Image (tube, rainbow over all chains, first blue to last red; front, side):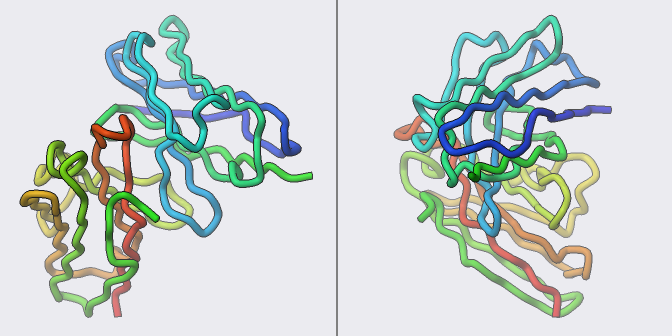
Length: 116
Length: 110
């Protein structure tokens, strides 16, 4: 059974940093791209970032480019999202997702709140 | 404002057929496959349709997808109360080099 377990969310002040982690199990993790998708309160789904299976290629939404960094550790079956210079508009539930074009499994999400 | 255009809402009575449209451009739907996701409040989103018209294992055949040119649509036939959810279309955008979602369509079963 595919499982994606996010952690690292919480309350952070504007301008602060946070690192999200996602532990994956139940599939050949090192063979798949991974992504982060978020949903702000009352809003729709927004793609944030994707990393290729090897970690060589990364992609970012314009809204987070230069502030967020995605990475992965294939020895730990874990994908990370480092978030810097956080803004109020980054407040959202962040979902860890398996896949690149077809996002076939989603974690339960972790809430990030940016507020003073 | 999203790159992919969906109606914000749709509704029907139990047993009816509901269709949701998704309009894009040559850089997304026009050149890449469309996927659909179902999101019930408080739960993780779920892949409903992939590669335009394919259903993952476990998705009822009441759900179907199609694509033509730069538009796609999701149809729910035999609408059931448990189908009340938000539905999102999505595709890779070659110009943006990113994945784009529609704004989501809230389906209400009357």
